Image (cartoon, rainbow over all chains, first blue to last red; front, side, top):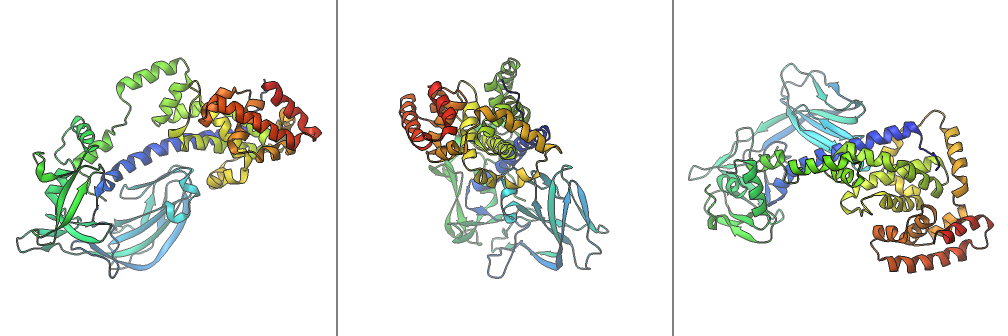
Length: 267
Length: 227
């Protein structure tokens, strides 16, 4: 039997990459698990944080408006590193961060959000491996730190931002309507349905209930998950007045769709 | 930034496909007997150590096959790396033969070696980042010298390119890796009868291309012997 072997240095590096790839896949899958919750909704619930608003784009009440101050600063580093930003402009209250992974690894923003890249990701164009976050600018802090493993390379673009959060609307019945933001969740939550054709609002309480909001234990969650595999739950979409129905918002991806009102979910 | 519902939080903490305690016990018991199937099951549950032990179990065999199918040691290393990365990327659809991923790896290695440039494309940045020993040149020469007796010639390599990927895998694995028709057929998802027929036709086509070439005789003889 031949004892032909690969270059030991190459072998060791490849072994490390394979182990990291498996570990990263685990993390990525967890992240997708979280995202699945959003993608299982037959429409999109709009949230305040990080929503980019441009002229002509649907901008529900409560959404933040970001104004970039100055240009992006760009830096490429390996491992955990801190980027000095210099003194912030007087009106800056947030930082806009665009983080690109250049190698396999998990890269963590100052707010705890992270970007995980596996072996396939790093061969994609930069735009496909870039995550954006807007994080609060702490007084007296003029730097930003990205956390990563020692050999993990990343590129960060940073700009100061003046972010102003608009107020929720209040309809004739006194219900707040808009997007989730730092203040919490309005009673009527902005949604987009029909592939973006229709903008409207759902009752936050109904959405929570339809998404299994009263589940308390892991066992109940698993049961809910099994039941949800066979049926989706629909809730009405209203205009901002909270009474005129303009469509249906579906929670779940099963073909059988059951209205929330026909279920006794106790929430 | 999504407002995650309690359900989603619970599912994130306790994903439905999490390994249960009973399956952990099973895996531990089976792994104690060094069973590759258990390592594979554990790998599918994102156990990095289990996947690395599969790599360590098969890397030399895969590398030797890659050396045979390529023109230099660095190509062979990149093809080997790509084969294991593909093993992970396509883990949901890998067909095991007698509890082993080796036949799948060897078929994949054959396919990757048919077009090294294409194989590198997907993992370009990653492969470029993997270091080599300082004295790589001498190691490469030594490796090539030692594989020479079973190394396929350029003509055979080109002839393999004239076949479909699955026919090339049938030829290469039965001739050089002493895989049985059944093993290769299982990985390719065809019946043993179909494998036999296709192998017969592929060998005829190969012989038509490389027959007159002296350097290819050894390879073809080995193929004949292995049948």
